[in-house]
Length: 74
Image (tube, rainbow, N blue to C red; front, side, top):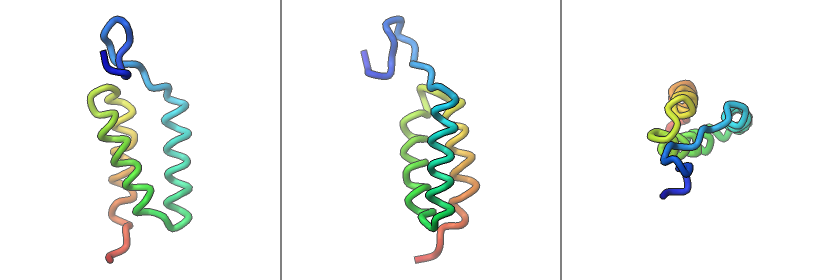
């Protein structure tokens, strides 16, 4: 059993409030000029949540689509 599964074998539900808090933190990071860092972290969240929590994955994916185009060119 993976750490993301309950005893019944179903993925654990990610509390929506936790997703909101994390997204607010990433937004604050992006607004402070750390857009690339915020997007990297959001991408990691997407990868971690894709199979186990589609709703949470979608929220982080929306964040990426909003902020990724704003990453400055190197």
